[in-house]
Image (cartoon, rainbow, N blue to C red):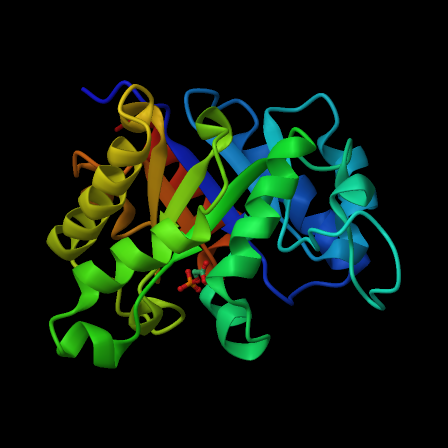
Amino acid sequence: MKHRKTVIVGNWKMNTDVQSGINLAKQILDLSNNITNVEKIICPPFVSLTSIAKVLKGSSIQLGAQNVNPNENGAFTGEVSTAMLHGLVSHVVIGHSERRMFNDESSDQVAAKAVSLSKAGMNPILCVGEDLSIRKSGKAVNFIAKQLEASLKGFSNWNSLIIAYEPIWAIGTGEAATSAQAQEMAAVCRNIICNLTPDLGNSVRVLYGGSVNSKNVAKLLEQPDIDGALVGGASLNAQEFSNLIKLASSK
Ligand code: PGA
């Protein structure tokens, strides 16, 4: 029996406009608001956050953003700061492989985001993941350990942290990692955290992400070090996402 509460996060990525986002949030709320033994977080695009915050107000579903700029304010065209998100969202996804890849984000920058979120009282959902060539070369364990450590430089607010192990080769491919592969890497992440904070390491939640759906979620959550899922594609369908939450609630 795990002592950590299961958490299911929906990462909508660059999908939905304001109106379809509101509709999707309402449907998810209808179908899953009464499931309270799972922590549920949805992360819509920035432009929808204010409207969806109104939909979720007083509900059991929390709101997250998909990125943040660690600077307080200033000449950063197109960026959004922690101060702007404060009071609007409880969680922020940082270090997603798509941002590391398409926006050249370094682990140093991810660490700065983690620190600025923790100063502002928000919870980082910190993603790490290796690509296929690293996995094939047998260096995944080493790579993830290094990436996670570098992405946590200067961070110490362990109670607020959620980690998501998301192998790049499994994201959006329909080919999730096997539960054994996911467990192995979740344990690597947990070991790193336990080394950094021996007292609190075992209470930090580690999620798996990469083609999670209602068919594979149960098996993944059976693993001792996997405390939930970061869900992309399957979070855009209210019925599928709620089924997944329901399955997680019975774990
Ligand atoms: P996927 O995305 O579920 O569509 O594979 C997961 C993610 O990138 O967070």
